[in-house]
Length: 426
Ligand code: FEO
Image 1 (cartoon, rainbow, N blue to C red):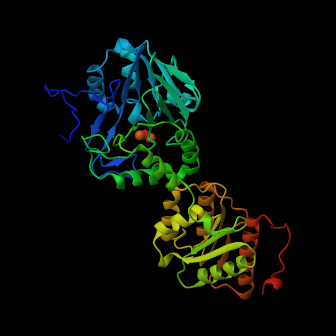
Image 2 (cartoon, rainbow, N blue to C red):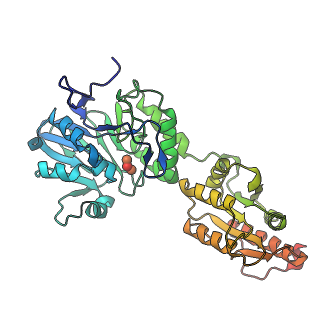
Image 3 (cartoon, rainbow, N blue to C red):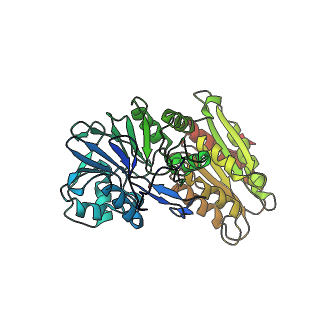
């Protein structure tokens, strides 16, 4: 018997036990193919919600997307009564987990709502109600259900600023929210029963968690010491077989890989360019030569015409700075540059060094547009973009060298506010 028993003998949704006191009361959404506009899923997702019973009452942890509320409520009713609910915990306020909340609060008005500190303004924004009663909590806070309890872990940005995890110590269960989740719908529910979901797990991490690796590592510091029997995320399989394996995988995915190749005082600077007639390429090569003059900067030069974007995203994620070279065509930077930039939304670029250059024929807007985009992505762009009309002259090549030199010095924190003598760079 592989399937979890999601329906009773009358064909009605019913709760699925995780233990004697804890049940899954979520819903399956096998037809979903796109989540949050950007995430694909080949077989849908699940909205996992849970109920835990203590000697003095019942708690619900997370709800489901609004259109799936009927399954959620019917499953809840198969194991408890609304009058028993003392606690509702929202680990994350995204609508796929709060859709059933207004109706749940109407059915259980006595219940106390627990959310993270950072969720307070979001809750008001989502529910549009002025008279909301809730208790904001942080790491170290807990609530008792008699012989069961819930402890809160502050784990922001996994996936929104509001996210938290909730630990039930007497059960050894971590209700992890989106953390350790994936969009994978399988009625067998448990990781030791469902089909191969490794790709979905990794894909979900890459798109949801990757931009917040620092926060993942901080969350793991809270999670790793916990005695765990099971991880109960809000999407995808419930992780009851070797839950520690998924914690280890998150750790592997979140630690930098490239830094180990550099000594502590070295920094990496990547120069990407694309060129129509070789003019932007000449600029790139001169900038590269200028940057090479700064000790301890590991400079790399790449022609975007010859590379796939995905490996470059990995390099940029771990680099300290990047310089982009683009011609201007029809008043814009060219598509390979925009393709690269649009791929960077999955990585954290904050405070990396940025620079832009390019040759142009008529108007040269491309450099400014890319500069604006770099600032929008929160890179530091300390030196205005360098533009050259058509073929660079010898003096302009020297300017390119100076541009590369200054950006590399800026990267190392040794740039002086002085005029560079172009003759020194020839
Ligand atoms: Fe599953 Fe971020 O919501």
